[in-house]
Length: 222
Image (cartoon, rainbow, N blue to C red; front, top):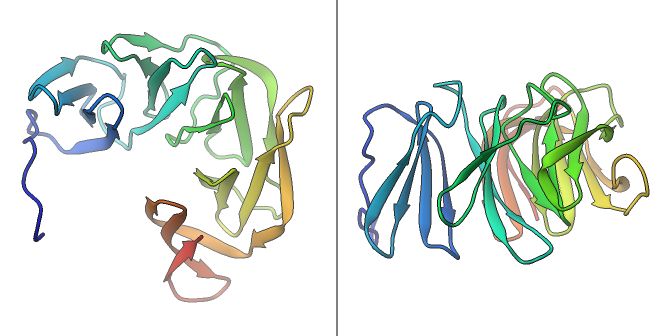
């Protein structure tokens, strides 16, 4: 579109599975097949991280994770394997048996936790505090305002937004001593479904959804 120019061409010919720009490091991550490519916009160089995942198709999600010592890494997942990538492009694979598997490939960071949803469920799992590679059995809560399953999660301001096939629920960090740190905010629950087309800009989330028995529309949560 007007005012934009090509920054870099993918070094791989297969379709991309997901993309993320790490602003503080000036690095563009994009996944093709089972590899992650890292393009440094400052130096114009590209690094290939080979065979990161065991899958070669399907969406790959990314998010930044901040440790309490101010170290930042990028977490990435294909729904089966979770990895973290540091500023030197070193990969660490999560080997914790309590990692929900399979899970939806939409990692979300909130208040020192990494959140994931177990696939085919309404269960939102959290990592151990200050460690996205460590998970504890039983540290989850269920989005059960209605009897629908979760299809995506996202962060909006200080809320974890849980999109279901019939509802949208809001959760916040209540610092519970055991289990999940989350508590549902009952007031803003929405009775409309998420269909796709997710895009986030500042404190607004745009998506395609529908009300019960209604036609697909574009919605915005702000």
